[in-house]
Amino acid sequence: MKSTDLMFNIKKQATILTFQLAFTIMRIFICISTLLSLFIIFSCSDDDLEIKHISELQTYIQRNIPKQSVIAHRGTCIWAPENTEAAMRWARNSGADYLECDLQRTSDGYIVLYHDMTLQSKSNVNTIFKNTNKIYISEFTLEELLKLDFGYWFNRDHSEYARESFYNSDILTLEDLIMICEGYKIKRDKNNRRIFKKINNRIITEYEPDSTDNGNRPGIYIEIKYQDLHKGIEQNIKDELLRLGWYAHNSSELKEIRTKVGCVNTANTPARVVVQTFSTNTLKELNRVFNPIIPICRLIAENEKTKVDEKTYKKWINEAVKYNAVIIAPSINSDYPDNFLDLLQPWMYDLIKESGLLIHPFTFNKTTEIDYYKDMCDGYFCNDTYSAVKHLNKKNDLDFSSGENILNSLGY
Image (cartoon, rainbow, N blue to C red):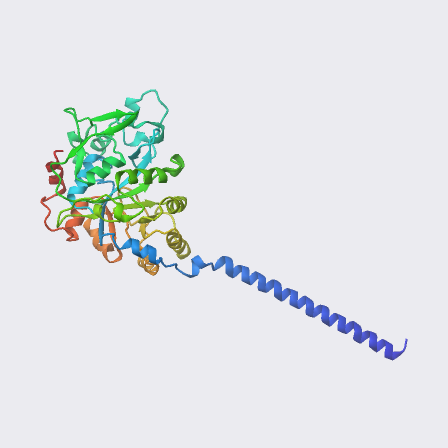
């Protein structure tokens, strides 16, 4: 082989190797770039980098929600059995802006107030129905539930607040709650049993004006409980609110609730109903069912042993904004009725304020807790709304000197 041919072949091979090396380097660069892009996408998503802000519609919905709202948690968890008529009448007369409750559905379709998953915890179901394995609200008819005592457990567990009149407290329906907000009470016989009729197999409760009503007209702040046991309850609640005039497709069609100057008037505003939930799926369903949308609150809580980082907190906020919530309700470090992690620390507050969501933390038991969180709150879930209302100077002309006196005035 001639030397010129040898040199040509060497140059040719060198050129090929150079191109192969360049191609290999380019492929490595592309792989590295792709991996880096994927890393950025998955580790630095929109939820992590940027807080979403509420829309003009959400801002518009917020406008009728009372400033520094006092929300009567289950009516009260201190002065009377929670979610009962005694608790709700007490909360109305104490000056609460909203009566808060937990909603479930009976086997025959009534929407009732009850917090716990099983009836054994706060009723005498095992005494009245000795030979049954049923434990859930959804397994009983309303008429069966009306046979139960939802007050005896309170007298047993809270002897310092016990009253003879709390025995035989019956379960409330959503209609009962709304009638209490409007200044009525359940009509009862001499044995304190509710008076009702059955028309076409439907229970129709009788109501009468509450002679102890002091003119306050609070709204309702309802939580949907145990969605897996109550599929489609969002639609059932909407239908009942429509029937009672507390929801309408046009706010001008809402039932007019008469109010008094100087008294709570939330019931006569478009923000008369707030719906709250811990569940993302329920947030989605509320958006589907309620059109136009009503005020929605996203609840967030973790137990004390859980660590919550910034990424998780931003995800909660952005999820709330995405599904048209206008309020976020983080747990605070309070010891009753649950021990939750403090999810309203200053850095958390800063993130929420970027979004424009209102902040209604839960649950306040003492005025010292209100003072600690006051600068970070737009509203308060309270177990003693009377003390909160007085402390926040929301209503200076309350006719009672204590929560106990409100119960006395109501005849309990």
